[in-house]
Image (cartoon, rainbow, N blue to C red; front, side, top):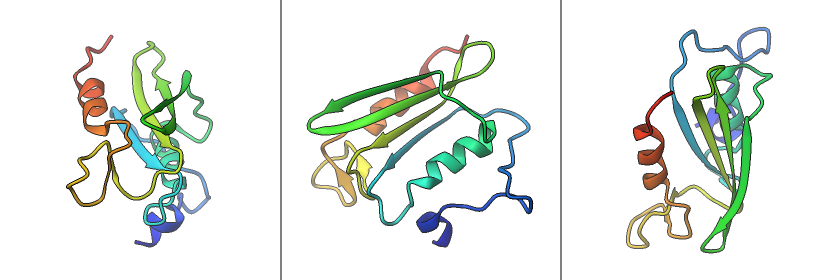
Length: 124
């Protein structure tokens, strides 16, 4: 719970540990989430790609009144290995979920559809 609220910690030197083998990841994070601190998204990127990771492309859009920024991080061969969706005003909820569900935010974007797109996309 502590790491979710304040962000994780790096190794003993303060540097994020980079994964030895890349794993494709997609991260959805509300910038107003009081349960999982928004810094966790950056910590996951740093752990996967290193502290100096820079997105290859950032797209800012809005859907049903919810603005967001989608950052794509590509491997040297150009394949997108990691996406971060930072949802403006998003709290601790499943993005795009049905209003009848618990911990859902119907404003979107639809996290389920985006995860399917991301993981089913052919790799270069």
